[in-house]
Image (cartoon, rainbow, N blue to C red; front, side):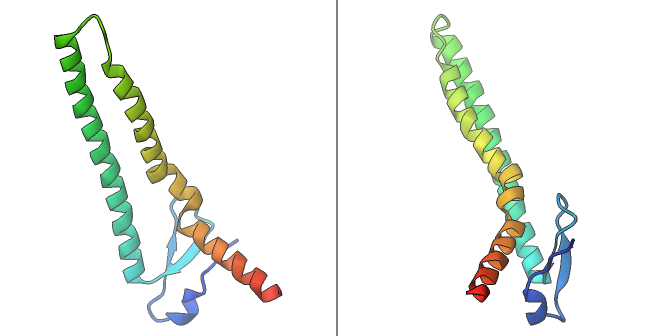
Length: 121
């Protein structure tokens, strides 16, 4: 089953079909500019996650070192590691998982759903 967006009718000469890599049965018409901006935002999101992960690793190694040097009998660094790790996990899910469920394809499907409901009224 293939779904398409109403943009195809407005931009027939520039419209391109883009297949989502994780859901090849859904095709959304996107022009070259839209594809570029979508890809650029996606790359920025991924880069932001890896930057966050890098800072997390560096800071936690630093905290571990400080903790072991200053008070090796009372470990406290792991509290920061655990709670910040939860934040990292949510960031990863937002970048790599939730986008698949609530990304562009979901938005387009919801728009079509709402438009169909309005037409039926």
